[in-house]
Image 1 (cartoon, each protein chain N blue to C red):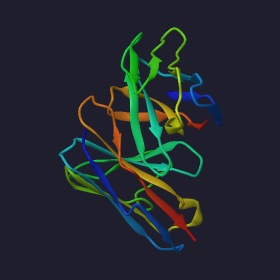
Image 2: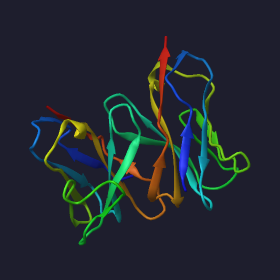
Image 3: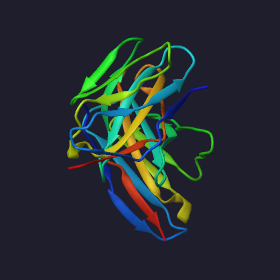
Length: 113
Length: 113
């Protein structure tokens, strides 16, 4: 079946530190992979996506590379800001982008000045 | 991407009552989904709202508890029936078109006393 395993939080970093949030997946076929972000009191926003192996998704300084050989999609950012404080969800879809999203448990990131 | 409006944004309800949550989209979309996010947890798909026919429910969710309507391609409602404190969650509507990723509303924060 499909599942996503995500690095447990919470994660606390100082401003300008390097961020990695690990995500690995189990899926049949060739899933699409996503990172969503949930800022305090808000819904989920799509942060980035990758639809095939070796694709790199990027947005707002965040990056993640679809690694089929390690079944991973780790989220990275070189220099975090206080405004990046949020909960980050890794997700996969086994039928393109639209259907049946499977979410990880979420990782809460707090960036302190 | 589509603009999604969810109402109410939050509510506090008495046990045994029911609440209907509305999801309005500013454009016609093929797919609409309802998710539940229990406190501190990830998202779980409740059902796919099908235009003009009965919703497709995921394992563990039933129509009697979570009736869903979708009268057209821009609007859907989710009712949480006979509420108990265990129903205290954030309920999120999402939409998708074709192979594009799902986009989420800001959610409805529901507390049951």
